[in-house]
Length: 450
Image 1 (spheres, rainbow, N blue to C red):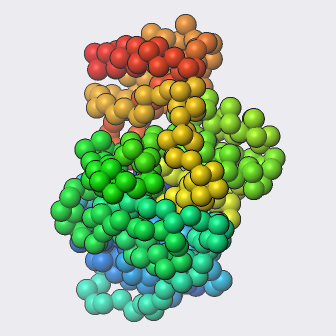
Image 2 (image 1 turned 135 degrees about the vertical axis):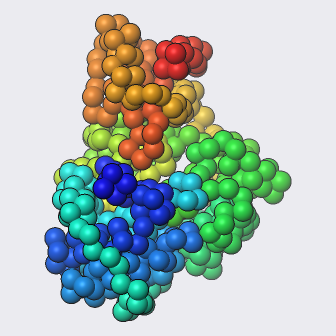
Image 3 (image 1 turned 30 degrees about the vertical axis):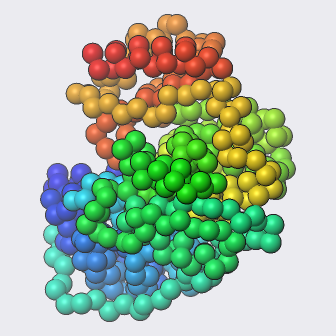
């Protein structure tokens, strides 16, 4: 029971295979999804992990046993499952993926018709209870499924965010990290005037170059080196299921996702003046400043893809961004997407005709930040309580949207427990004072680790 429970988190399923997540659990999840939502047609997609096919088959059996037809999307990204869920006649989608987690992990992301997210606030706890109450075992026969691809219409949707005729012939490094992004890059390539320099392009579930997670500094070297060696205009790297993309400037420098949120918010507000922008609570000042200056409305949401999407729908926001490189678009069913952002950036570079580093330099100088720093602690709750007791009496305000966010006159920080990993995450920013930001970061880390 405890092992099954451990694979359910705040907004998806994630756990070790087979201890936490296995074919029987997947089968019960399919049964529960079918019983609760009574779908007629459900689309299933999977990433390149070796365990994904068996888990997909198990979910398919559960759905079939509850009377649903199963559409097999095959190998695809999470964003393609979201796209499938937006198609007529599709009542939901489940993507089998563990994204950037270790090689022995897998998981699932669940949405209803229209790509409506299923999180702990909107049905995931009920599905969890149904799975825990079941002892059903997955059948051994191959499930009956209908293979179908929506990729061609999806590519056309991606291209709708840019003026292809106005694009310059940029040189772009694209690093799929041996995940699934390469297939979409190849499908986009004939429509774009870019020279694409492909790195770790072939999908490989053995992950010969490590798990694709560009948030880890050691995973950025290949993209950085390729940008510099090829004198590229910028670089893009993805995680395994490519619902996130990470950008590198023309010097090969990794760009913190926080500043990309501000860049895209401004771009979207130029297209849709006066609209609402959703952001997460970890790093905020730069985004709020940009949105206010552009005449938009900045709205804070709890961290996590399901929570951001739910808030975007409630506010009808045109764009939402998390510093973790999740970017959400109203025109994409309020879902996160790992290809729209880099296409928008290419459009900006073509229009502005200046380097990416120059587009961002003033914002980075105005609001320097630590980037996200992860720490393993004995107790997340006790650590949060202890840090608040140290800093709470000094701050101007405390925000508890997600963890604790404490703001002072010239600096602020957010400290929160991860929803998917047993770590605590720290983010620090200041108003134009990098030395202050570094000093406060070091002091906080000493308290957290001590």
